[in-house]
Each structure stands twice: as structure tokens, then as C-alpha cells.
Length: 420
Image (cartoon, rainbow, N blue to C red; front, side, top):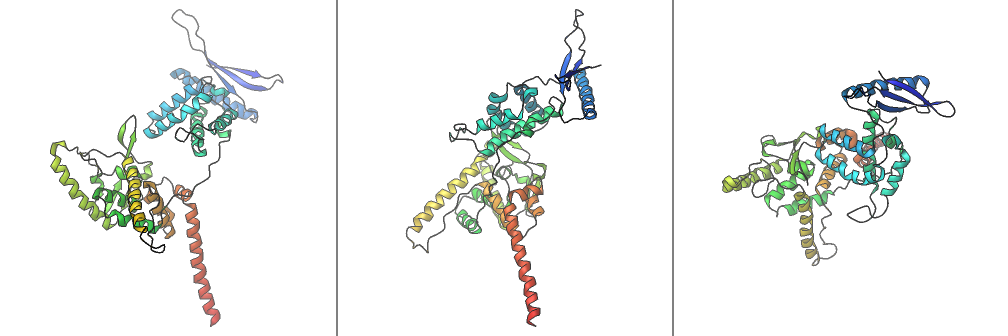
């Protein structure tokens, strides 16, 4: 049975309760130090609210003590953060996310790691965000961290404190009351139709494997890891379908490894054009010829895009290829342009990366009038709202286009009647 004692301030107001649970005695019969926790009362709570929350805290604390899970709000943020990260890892949070959490903690822990959970206030976090905005913290550039990166730190702290709040270690989530920097939304980087047509033209001169990979990026809108994780048994050659259910990733700890797609909704079946499927069929013949030639030296992983020995390719390979492809053909274009007049000059290829093709497909489909739900499902977004958030500016353009169509249609009919 827990022992609960009031704690009052100088004015006689109850500010907290001390909760103690008997721990028992040691081998010599000496009474052990009891489990203790402090339950703080928020200023805006009514007496009824306070008693309700106190009862919840007492019941949970007693259960935790019986199970040996002691709720200790006096432990440091660093210690509790380590507990939460391990908890996330055990409950199936993706390895890549855990790695990122640990990277962010390297900047968080030196600033607030020593503070007790019960001491952590929004002011501490605001001071951290200000510190993170100073020059020199970006290891790649030597300059400041972007607001987006600082916001990542804030979200991790909020996640950790949300768990503490859930376990009744803190009365409120300090991060929820802090003020992180605002991030300006950037329009998605997408290519013009003319640029895609030029890329497809120059691709015809490239090796077959690269042709297939780039065509899949262009015509499916898949993420890089989803293309690199595609396996032959996930291709329905008869019905021109591919199943996306694997993501190929890389980390220093694991090397190249397979994972499920980003979200459950990312598992999907996509229709692809017949021309792309014909390319895949031709590539499969080339693939099988190499596989048979290597015999026992071939690693049968089942991936469509592999190294010369059959092992899966590093996901960065596709990003690197996009850059090399652009540089190669822009050099050729510039050489040809040097011999042409200004009007005859060919268009240079813009900056391209795997994700740009994903944005391009979305933009073309939206501006062509395809409904947002269908676009969202094809891209594998967790929610339709994700699609509208990313491509809101394009949806506005599509809406304006629809408005113009209606205006032209109705006023055209209206003017016909007046003219009669």
C-alpha cells in the first residue's frame, strides 16, 4: 500500500505529493529504503482533477514497483533517452530511424543530458535550439544547421518526453511547450516534360541495366531503395505489374540490407508501360546470360539490379549514376552547342536525382487532372494528406485550371444563348 503525503508552499497551497511504496527488508531484517516519486500538481488543476490524476499515478507506481519497473523522475535525460531508444528498437522501429536518433543525441546530450526529467523545462530546450543555430555545427559545411535539422532534434526530444509523460514520470511534455524554429516549406523539385523526354532520348545510348533502372524511376515514381530492392519474382510480365514490398538500404553497422518499405501503405502494386516491360524482358535475358556464365561464382540474391557477381548494389549507385549521366551528356550538348547559333542551341539537362523523378511523376499526374487519392496510392504515401502537403502548390494550379475550364465552358454556352 502506497503512502501519500502532501507538500505545501509557504502560502499553504498543495504543490506536490510524495508517494512512497514499501520495498521490504534485506537479509538481515533491516528495512530497505522505499520506492519514492514526486507527483507535481499543475496550477490550473481543480481539486477533483488533482485527485483523479494522483490516484492514477499511485496505482501505476505501485504496479511498477511490484514488477521491478521503478518510475524514477529523478533520472537524467541522458539515461532515460537511452532507455527510450532501446524500447523503440525492441518494438520494431526501423534501423535507419534508430541510427538517426543516435546521431541527433550526440548534440542533444551535451546540452541537456545531465538534467533530471523532473527539472527539464521549455526554457532549456529553447536555449538548446538557439545553440544549435550557431556557426560551425554543420560538419559538412562548417556553417549553421538548417532549421529542418534543428526541428529533427526537437521532434526526437518530444518523442522521448512523450514516453516519459505516458509513464507518468513528468507532468507535461516540455518539448510540446518549447518554441522550435519554423521551417519554410520548399516546393518539390520536379523536372519539365521536355527534360524527361531528353533524358529518355540520351538513355538509349546507355547500358541496358542503367536504362531499365532509370525508366523505372521515371515511370513508377518509386523511391530509390524500392527500385534497388526490386526482385525478379515481384515482376508480373504478363500483366505489366510490379510489386513493391522491399526497400534496399545501407548503414555503416549493417552494410547493404533489406527492409520493408517506408510505411505499410508503401507496399503496393504498380502498373508500368509496355515499353518499360519490354526493356525488362530484354534485360532479363542479358542478366541470365551473365548468371549462367559465372556458374557457382554467381550469388543468387534474386535482385533485379546487381553487381557483376550477383550481389545487391549499393543504393547510392543510382544517385551517383544520375549525376554522372547528367555531366556526361551536358558535356556533349555544350560541345554541340558551340557550333550552333543561339536559336539552334540544345537544352542542357537540369540537376537530376532519383527523388526528382518521383516528384515529376506526381506533378504531371496532378496537373493532368488525376485525383489526389490515386496519386497518393501510386506513390505509396501513408496518407493522402501527405500528398496534398507536398504538392499543395500543384493542386492549386490544377484547381485554377479546372476553374478556367468551367468558366470557358459555361460562358461559351451563355454567350451562344445571348447571340441567338
